[in-house]
Length: 212
Image (cartoon, rainbow, N blue to C red; front, side, top):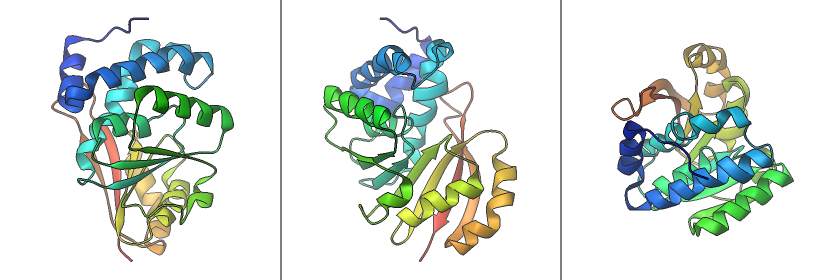
């Protein structure tokens, strides 16, 4: 199956993935076939796999420090976890997903792509605490920030950062979650956009800096 990609999207993909663009293309193929067949994504997402999903996630890689250890909460269809693992082969990723069918799919895709920087943990985020000493936690479309903070921040044993991919309500979510973020060790929280020079619609990220 050939997935359409615009000239601008292709340029962005080449910039983000570099020599590993063929891996990103294979990942998109998996999303378009078995990902939709197994209900990880809806069929209406097919024309938007590159811009709305893969590039939208992968561009967040520019916020991850070199050689970081990253936990991705609620990996689902590998968004953002697998997209970031392809874009950032220097970093190590722990994909956390509780549902067996999604875990099986993630394992199949990871094996097919030959990704050596990915480990998959089947379970809830709270069950993964202490399983890996991570520097960064990522998440996308998991829950409102007030609930997401309690799922992600405890995964950081020491100082680190949470990168939560959010939509237009990010600012409101930050206000509502401010108290719990402070209680969990959040030093600062800010909303940023990334990929504005590459994507038609840049990605909105809530960055929570944690110090303990």
